[in-house]
Image (tube, rainbow, N blue to C red):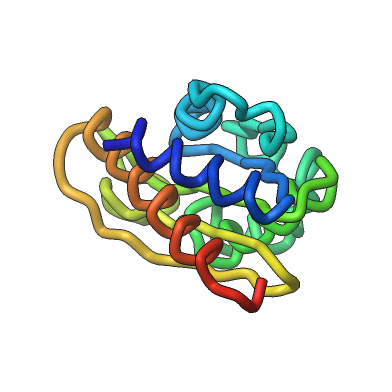
Length: 160
């Protein structure tokens, strides 16, 4: 459940003295809403960018325009650049990103349910590829839960 996962993420961030910024395309602010619903989130949550339009990923987050032109917005390297860019531009120690296809139609040649999530922390950025089933809302909710889980795993590591 996203609420319990969000509480754990905020707790881990606060305990470590880390801060987070999120860049959400596919989820349209759902991750930011889940994190900021946690009491005390202001101690760890820096902010969010929701660059739903592809061009804004380049303009606001520094995603290379050539990458977007060649592959579209639904690509692992886009998720990586979004996570790095949002952490850098919002002054956070951790960046998280979502990009993908929630439906109802395919996008950039990618089928519905194709999702990439990224976490940037400690000088290392990880990207996970997801193939999710269900309707638009189910895909978006599952993406948030998967990314929260990925954040928990990264924050529990000692090397970030």
